[in-house]
Image 1 (spheres, rainbow, N blue to C red):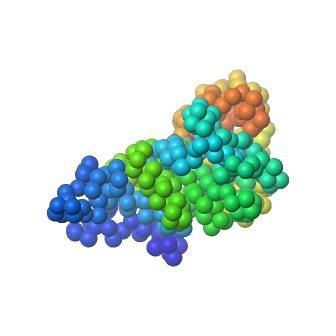
Image 2: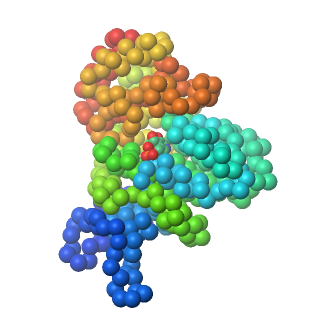
Image 3: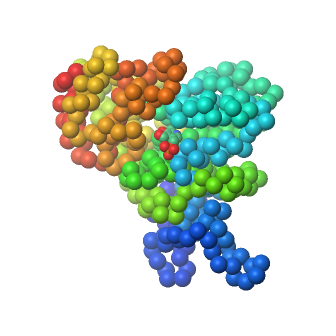
Length: 383
Ligand code: PLP
């Protein structure tokens, strides 16, 4: 399947599993355990925490989409992150992008910091800063691109190059772009991380996560940790994500086109001071984004003129956009990062990342773009 193009992989990668009845949809193997064929003779699966056919179908589909050899599905994006980062310990040092999803930041500072994992937050757009941050105990670099919510883009190939100079593993959270628009492994990144909750599932009805990688030895370690820690994706959730993935390409194209239309319109709007979207020429990493991404998806951010009062007046006047925490689904969602998604970050870090009171994050869905624009226009009239 890896040799096919993304649209074919999305529709067909999970097909061919059901050899018994030829079922076109992936069967949901809702079972905790599997009968042994005979004494000391397990079948291909023996216990659903270790492996399950529905999960295996999703895992191979995710691997094919990312152009990787091994996929792993988890109960959430955070479960995928926790399992991956559990491969480190004993004083290992990891360099994290300074612009980071707040849940990853919380996992680091409130959980893993107590487990003898050391870390620094570094601006990964500065390759010399990365080199300067490397210590004898440094083991890995954690990248997020584009970032949530400020849509900063970093050079995946260049960072993978610096990592190789120092023998470091690279991990990239690819949630925002999805494998349809960006494949980090193609640029030399070692591990791709996903919250499948977002675009991969795409219908706001599953919490899930994933890892994809190529190295067979590291895959064995992750398979061990996945089983040992047990934060696995349930069969029904795997079925739903697989169903979502079948339309990933068409959804992503539509999200992308709707979002770009809205971003360009917002850029001209008198009540908007800045639009943060990597597909706009005004974006500082526009050329880099074009080089390593084939599209941008439906999520971006913008600043209304004013501060929190204006942001709240705008949000309160919306009728079609739903105020909610997530992104990447068919319905358009909108969030105020300071009081919602990024509330947990220390204020000085929020300030440093540009997450200010007037910042709005928008997840443009698949409704008619003119209806979405009218809704935003009515909201902005209140600013
Ligand atoms: N990574 C990014 C970029 C996210 O936006 C999120 C959630 O919003 C996560 C990881 C965590 O995923 P989940 O909510 O599925 O645990």
